[in-house]
Amino acid sequence: MKNITLSRFLIEEQRDKNLIPADLRLLIEVVARACKAISIAIGKGGLADVLGGAGSDNVQGEAQKKLDVISNEILLEANEWGGHLAAMASEEMELPHPIPNRYPKGEYLLLFDPLDGSSNIDVNVSIGTIFSVLRCPEGAEANEQAFLQPGNQQLCAGYAVYGPTTLLVLTLGDGVNVFTLDREMGSFVLTQRNVRIPEDTKEFAINASNQRFWEPPVQRYIGEMVAGKEGPRGQDFNMRWVASMVADVHRILSRGGIFLYPLDSKTKAKGGKLRLMYEANPMALIVEQAGGKATDGHRRLLDIQPTGLHQRVPVILGSKNEVERVTAYHAG
Ligand code: P6P
Image 1: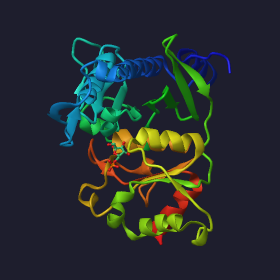
Image 2: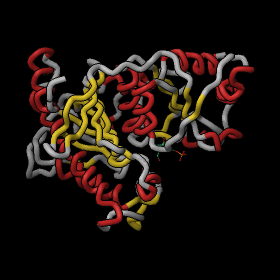
Image 3: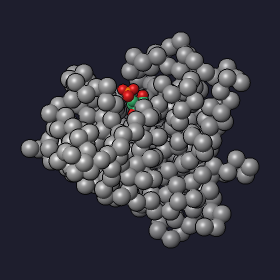
């Protein structure tokens, strides 16, 4: 594959498929540049004062890490002057972030989890940034209501995973492409085109410590996999759980698998663990665009009409045939 940078890819996609108006291309390039800056900040680790707690809580009431706050600031500052956004929303902020009046406003709404998997920061395990792009409804004020659109309205979704390499994974509704950060050039280079998730898998991802809280369909589904060859599935399965959704989803995108953060008696009151708008929806679009499926156990995640910016949902996504199986168990 020739050295196709993210910029060249976006320009050629626009020329060939007319998918990426200039302001959307600017948005994607600005977010990619912010992810580079986040990657550099993370890479400093103990060499700089970026590890440990920030001494504050986020809107979810979770203790913030310094890098949560730094990553959020990087994304806000990178995006507020460009004239491409009507507003931004983040896991780290209760309300949408308006574009300061000194800057022009645009038609897009940007949502992000600036640093997903924060519990892994201080132990040097992969973490990531997740983002989603919606269009601000014509003539609407860019308030929380403007963001409450189902995931099937996303124009673009992506994530950066900060691992042994820094990757940017992007979909514009026309397949999924992977870019690797070339640290010498300082640019993202296309390394995987039109990624496809295998429809079957032998690998599942779930936090097994919650087993006693799971509902019967999940008990049955995971129980059958753990039973292996001697069980009803007639084959052995493997388990992986990174506790960074970005890392688990990227593994699934790379070699198949099923990721479950299901509703359980522990999270039922909150509606689930993961957030719909800036975790489940962008990941669901990416997974579907790669040939996978994504439900909450009953419904397609992308069809859920949001009721709140920080709404939580159960998430089951990955290899098509396995998601269909566990969703069928919920129906049964
Ligand atoms: P648990 C990280 O905090 C996160 O939001 C996702 O990235 C990850 O999949 C999940 O929570 C991990 O949750 O309960 O295993 O710590």
